[in-house]
Image (cartoon, rainbow, N blue to C red):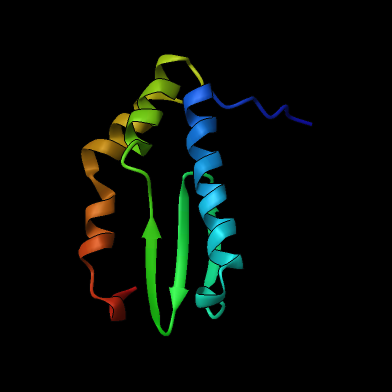
Length: 98
């Protein structure tokens, strides 16, 4: 069995804020028809009436950098991910293509 490591304090604070937002969205009466999921600890996906919104903190890439610096994640993988800017292709794709 592998051990699960603790998040850095910065990453934990961001994950906690997203968790609080997810809880608020799922409990707020005006958003009762929303579907709220967490595809990753640093992401929040909200679906409503055929539309999807992915909420990612602006600090997500910064947090990845801190995690690399603290030797919690592979720096080469983070470099490849950030240089490829894979999120731009997802954000700019039309809804029908997703």
